[in-house]
Length: 606
Image 1 (cartoon, rainbow, N blue to C red):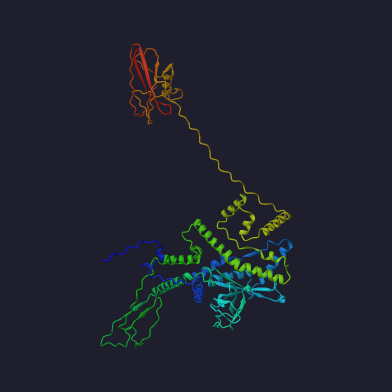
Image 2: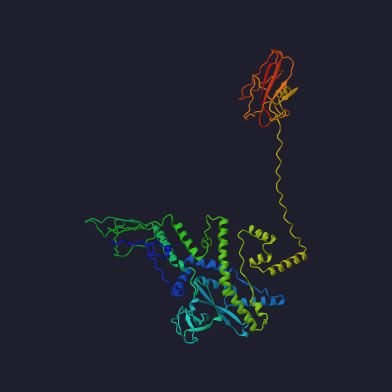
């Protein structure tokens, strides 16, 4: 029997295998331009989604508003003085006349261009030259052209095309692969124009055309709609939503049907028993349409059976929410902004979401909208102003090198955000001008407005508003001193007994005896016990107390009568008394605070 050869395992990616999990995954290696050969169909479906589906329209609308706002304005920072004012006024006059179709101004064209780009994947802007006597600010206008005008066809030779050039996806390329021209229909192909014959197309120089799109792969010539990856998903979601809606409409058709049995052989089947009038039979024709609340009588022998479709389920809303979260992710928009659903979202979470989305929006502003549309229009404007003799050749570079100012973002928190920016300026992290420009305003214009406001306030003798009162922290009252309890008569007598003519004798010189001043002493008696829950401190002091002879029948100390009962777990001390010459040894036990816990007196013969 032949021995099977063992194959050493190799490290590889599972995605590159052909096993059971991957056998049905067919992935052609199409190039960036072959992959979009059905671009016209994708474009038409994307437009239909934005026309008839709220989610498709929401994605287009939110991106258009976020990227443009009220407009991306230029600032001619390199010009100074009167020339800067003149060119700025000239631009403002041109912006009102910029649309070759005579409908929008330049900022409206920015909005329409971004909407067309996002919806169809691309849009073209064409420079249209005008005569000097047309009454325009500069002899030039801008025309927006839909992507359908440029057909998706390839040709290596074409009438009117220079030798060596080639056409790929409707774009003419030279031998180095540079775009030199665009071939476009004279009229929109959707307006009863078909075919790609040379008579229907016109060659437009690339210097007069700007192609606005976002390439996803290097070498990609045409743009793809942003919603292309979820168009099939949107279609399925819409069908499901429509089916649920129709089912709910049918479930509301509450109809009562009256049935009766067939009449007997000896009964008159043509006489209505209720009205005693002849019955008019209508074969195959419904008596009435089904409407809510209808009561319908059926013919003898007839019955009605209804289908029982499954319920939409209690998870319908959660299912739709999950599906649209995927749609929002494909569109690059946070679900909360995409749908307006901000349930169960905190303001801090929403701030993080919005800030991340704004980073993406700024990326598209400065990598697509401004370099592909805003800056080319500025350059066309400068060239037209030079041809009209409105600016000099030396001023041409300064007019073209503008500073673009997108519409500023609104504060998420109207108090905290301005305070944070003010702290950045105060601590030197950034300048006032950068913050003003971030808001979409011109710092120089803002300073001039502030200067005019101050002059007007002084002329009108308007007093500035008083500064806000400083916030004084609330004073916390100091805690009241703890009141010490006055010693009782018994304690005073006991202290006097121990401190009168007392001599201390230390057995161990290492142990220092605590002073006897300012502490309470409670001597145990047979009628009295002392309460103390603190652990005793073992301190032994030996001292001798000389006192006169003591009469056994008389008490040692005239103590006041004590009536309070105090519980003490310490056993009473033993005291020995002798009538002979006596020697008294007293042992005192202190706690950690220096208070006497217990005392023991031992009297022996001298």
